[in-house]
Length: 122
Image (tube, rainbow, N blue to C red):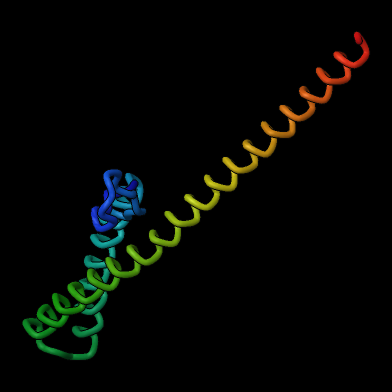
């Protein structure tokens, strides 16, 4: 889900989010590209034939429509999954911060109880 960024110059490379490394994103983008390309091919070919364009030209237009829709789906998928990956990272960070706050509150409560028990024994 992250790739190493070696531009920081330090010993430890930092990690940046990556859509390509995300397991669900890669599969989803690949699936949408294929479906959009096929749908664009079929739709443009059928519409061209219904408009009275010769068959050879209709198929060529369909291929062009399929290629265009393939690339548009690719771009849309990458943009959408960038937002999804960032949202997952933000949600994960917020959950970690909440667990850390709860841990600190529990530690403070136990310290106060131990201090009260020690004061009561003295």
